Length: 434
Image 1 (cartoon, rainbow, N blue to C red):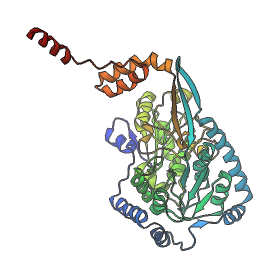
Image 2: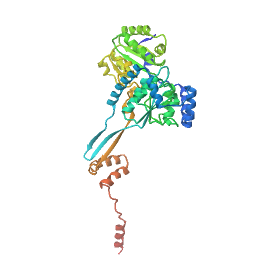
Image 3: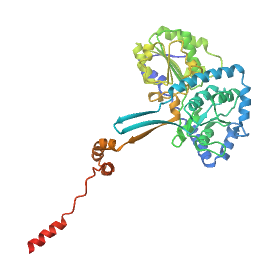
Image 4: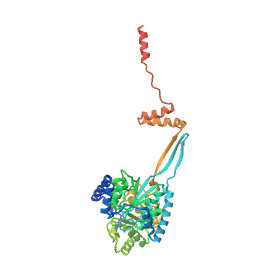
């Protein structure tokens, strides 16, 4: 059900840990065609694709009264859980907000940092096998906390629990559209869907391809490939580790779930538990067969090195000491009780995380993704006089004479043009001729 490989088998190890960047040319071509048509034709193309691909021919926007009425249809227990999860996400997002500050760099010279929210954010919410209200919370709440004045959401299936999450998260408008056409509509705007400043949220291959296509015109959070989990541990319980691998694998047949340990006996126990716990239906078995595995290393130091090399979306580590040595991961979960699934819903940290090796350079979605950090500079006459020589020296070192003169014309240090010597030479020649 899940294979065990030794770390010295580099080919198999690399196959297990290689970032899953799925470049499906036919999908990319189709996504490009959809994006280009919606960009060129707007509402007409958007409605056609929504009717043909999503099977929905009604209004694109869900009226506010329908959002609120639909939200009330969600089970009371689910609404209570959404409220509790939202509170934790808000607390974390509030702690993440960049701070404004003003610094005196030198006498008469200061720099201020302003934190300016984006004007409008679009949240993509997948609507595949199951409704994903947690995605609404994870994308919309940090935007709201950051101060974004308008947040919209696009989802091809507006289940009551999704609408309940939208109300709880403070989403302003909900559109019943999905796929590449929804991404294009948010990126370029149509008669009904407003153009947004940024698009966030996961999706299928068409959505990911469309986000990559529009990124030059409308910023996105990051390219989202298949979900990933990497567990690094030399102790059990084996049943818990197996359960975590299966939990992640049930997302998608392309999901990647890998366990790394230095203990062969534990590896075998986990493999047995995976076989015992495997559900009879769903994509978990396919995912683990094709993309899952257990790597047995010589030492746990080797396991840590492999984990840093992999830069997985979710990284589960058994001890604080090892967690401190991890540099590359979308999110890190420490200790056996910190189930990765808890991070999907209730811990408060964001579950919108980088995949496909992007964790080498950034972490998950956070409040700072929804603001601009703008520097405001102020210099007095005395301040410019003090730093002027630094500026002019460096400007001339770069061959930019105009830059230097821009400072010197203010400080009075500009060199006066040399006076012509022609009249003096002419007078001297006249005197000699006499």
